[in-house]
Length: 264
Image (cartoon, rainbow, N blue to C red; front, side, top):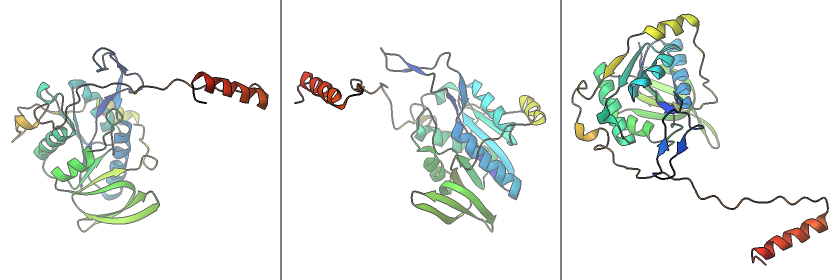
């Protein structure tokens, strides 16, 4: 039976996040949260793999206690068990620190044959986590997976999407896979699964529960990058559309505007 790990993340609704003009920090207070959409694509790929080849899906996330709701959402559509990593020492982590923490926590459940994760998160969009996780899990990696063709003899064969077409690749297990979102649409739970997920037991790890965890490699101390300030790009002066219905008039107005800007 395949052991499958799916990494998910709860993020703020990026369409509603605002920025503090004084500090340059994102204001997340009062902003609704949601499961990173690209992680739901990865979960769907994992569920389809489980349905075709058999297996058990473990979900894992790192975040505040309220991230439990994301795990329950994922349990409702095919996950079998869930792990929440939470605690103040994990706060402020970059991808380097986060990937370390996720792998150390996952190892508490043994080894995994397949690891699925979204190719990036909508709030950070670094696209770094998959490769870092593959390295730390000592796993091969297939990115931009279009479809999984077969899993046998300790190998996975898949079709991946390239800029110029598609190619079939084969990788040894364990393997980390990111998927194309237009091929794996997140499914809706049925009522029975939804109700079961609401009361399902979720394993919670704090910094004191994970074997061999180095406190200097988690949170801010373990982060190789620090973002001191976020600021919006400076926008250019808005353009104007000139359409009076007369080409001669339009050209005349354009010349006037260029003259005002000392562009002619």
